[in-house]
Image (cartoon, rainbow, N blue to C red; front, top):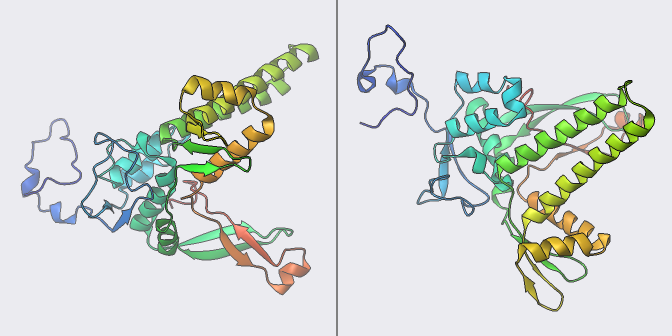
Length: 302
């Protein structure tokens, strides 16, 4: 007989039980849906991910413990809550820290569907007005749209550079977000300090900004695997790529940054498009507008 997907540890002082004989076993959670990852598992090792013959992987609904995990502030900030929930609900993912950005939104969306059903109510403010509207979205339709995306690893700039990139793992993404959050907190704290003069504040602001700039540069640098020049010279040496980014005109770097951002957003969940009513248009709303889908645990996993 198969082992249960989840088991509770023996409590101190309680007799050990044979879970194979547990009459409650038939009520354990089962896979609610099956999905294909946008990455098709391309970026994972066997230690991080177990592929299937069909390419589809099962998604289990969240447990009560998973829901409680998503309500732990510290675990949400450092990413541990998301990691724990993905590993709990997606048995084929062995190390959720290694999940690449192309797959992250899809996994969270699938877990949401498996746990709460196929629809979700969104609320937002109509642009140009103070009016709040609610809209019900069909989540499987979103999942299907993302499933049609063919992930590419390279792009071409207008000045002829072919840039090959790699996706960002959730660990890298989280570390970047936490670091940026800490820099923002430091910036806010400095503005209210009264124990230093304006000259010292200016020096600290400049240092903080420099560190943030270096962090963004490092993210860009790490993402680039290869650059092919307009003359078809192929560069894969990391030191040469770093030197190129540090010395090329800013317009080229900015275009590479835009290309990288577009590449990373290939499998992101797109905002829903809504049309304003005549009354809303009279109040200043545009004829059509977009409402983003955010994976905020405060409203997405409820």
